[in-house]
Image 1 (cartoon, rainbow, N blue to C red):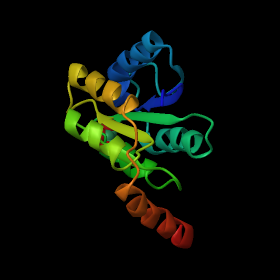
Image 2: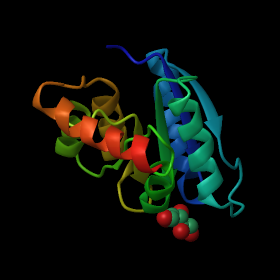
Image 3: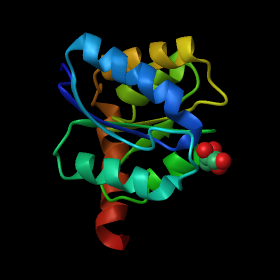
Length: 151
Ligand code: RB5
């Protein structure tokens, strides 16, 4: 399945990587909405994570990409939104696996941890890898059931 729409955000720690990813999306002809500071001014990441995650959860866009210094804060916040499966990824094996096994709909990256070349490879793999379903569907169903009952 080709991804056609993405919401993208960063805090001040991820501005440069956000710009590189925006250029990549532009080159690929993928429509994107971009959130986050234009300058290095300090901003809090939770609301940015919620904004992007809500757009994914309501299916306004197909996928979300979030960047902060470590990717940790963004991923924690994103996973609070019902229906979001966000993975913090720093290697290409996990980029494949988290799509094939976890059907993640939001990707978090740590701009102070993962260099730009690797980060762009991760984005490319993550956007172009399909969910496998099968044995993984039952496991994801258990997470959805928990959300339905408790969230
Ligand atoms: C901001 O200094 C930093 O805390 C943020 O970018 C992120 O790493 C949080 O998890």
